[in-house]
Image 1 (cartoon, rainbow, N blue to C red):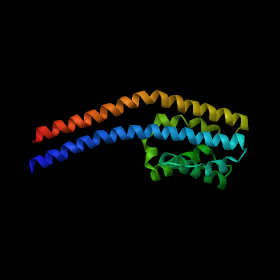
Image 2: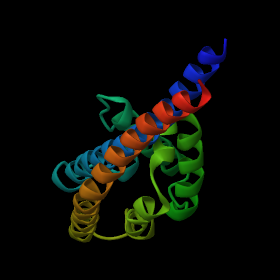
Image 3: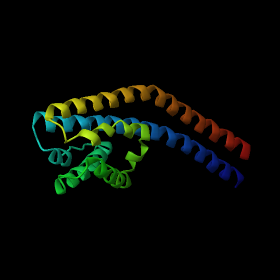
Image 4: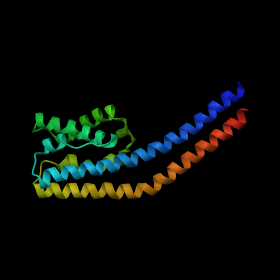
Length: 177
């Protein structure tokens, strides 16, 4: 009986380490999906000349991360379609809360990650097409640079959390036996 409890405690420790490692991986995947969504928005607005609300509502979504962003931008697009004069910043906050409640992967993003998108809610849809293209390019570059910076840091975090989880679980198992 005692060894069963030790085993469960050890496995719990291992699972915690793997969960932290998984969250770091998911954060990187969410940032990559964000970049993809921004590319699609840029293509719709700048190359096809579509209305912002229509572009936001029609984003493609192949995987869970892209579905989360498509849902977020879709909610934003719906709000803009219903109220074209609405402020994007106010709608952004409402859409983010709604999307994060429905799609938990969005919650893996830090405040630093989401702050990279703040120029969008300040200027998107209110400037000429060339200015929007430059804005989207700027935000995509910022997200790509942020991902590159985080890649090494998060790889270390994943490695350390996996190792500590395994070693902590093994140590806890041995102590409780």
